[in-house]
Amino acid sequence: MAIPSGLDAQLMTGEQTSYATAATVDRGYEFRAEALSLEAQRIESSGLRPGKRVLRTKRWFQGQRSVGGEITMELGTVSFGRWFKHAFGAVSTAQPDATNAPTVYKHTFTPGPPPPGLTIQVGRPDTAGTVHPFTYTGCKVSSWTLSSAIGEIVTLAVTVLGRDETTATPLATASYPANLDLLTFVEGSLTVAGSAHEMRSINLQGTNGLADDRYVHGSRLRNEPLEIGAEGSQARVYSGTIEGEFSNLTAYNRFVNGDEAELVLLFAGANIAGAFNSEVKITANVRFDGTTPNVPDGNVIMQTLPVKVIDNGATSIKLEYQTTDATV
Image 1 (cartoon, one colour):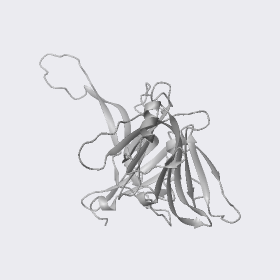
Image 2 (cartoon, rainbow, N blue to C red; image 1 turned 180 degrees about the horizontal axis):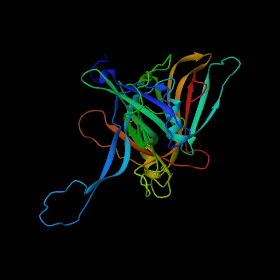
Image 3 (tube, helix red, strand yellow; image 1 turned 45 degrees about the vertical axis):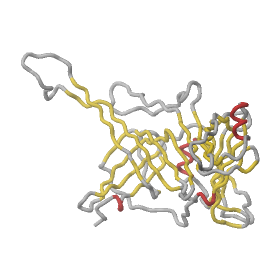
Image 4 (cartoon, rainbow, N blue to C red; image 1 turned 90 degrees about the horizontal axis):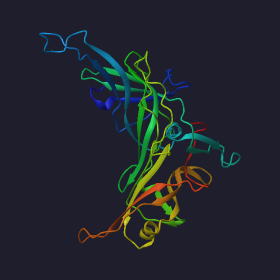
């Protein structure tokens, strides 16, 4: 019997080859919280009939179905390429030194066409110790947030938009990657325009413009969400917030002058082989959208820097994942 609480919950994923066809889930992830759920619309009659004050049976019907929600995970040194692929779309893989470090792979993720989707299964234990499988098909990452703060493990939160939910698929046996380490703020560093920038916290997020209203006659289920403008003509929007101490006017002047600069966020974990460590590295060209530092009290003055990724023709954003995973 399972522990009759969320302590025995599990989350597994599988790569779909087409949007409407479920995959066999084959990879588990430790997670902090999940909020995946089914939304089922109801269609109610507005017809009038003498003497009837309450909606009657056979005067309401089932409408559209949709699933979605957020999953929050602690960022690991292996296995997370799958999430990055579905967050960004395009991926290329290389070996930095196949001869001397044959177990090291670098996967580079950039904005590209969304994959068909994921099948996600969440095992939810009831109070009797039975773990019930809730399986979600056609799950696409509609947005994501990478967060790090002092004293914390780095987290990745993904919001998914899915096709349907079922409890008919048997519960998969939970399986997790070997040699999984977590990344913390201690392994983190940030450079802006090539210079080190001390930070207390950082949040970077991406929004993938996906059409969530693609319903047609003859089905309660949504057709595959296609790319649309998330903000005007921008199908992808990447932004973030950096918080640190007010040390000089450099960051403020970038905001005032409307300057762009290269941002490099690096989390470097344990050594894999030779000179190569486990890494998550985000490189982006960003615009600075504020702000003026203020004095709220007698403590060290803090400065909050909202940023937005801008494509300058050479760089927009990329995420490099250096790991022992040969594939994502």
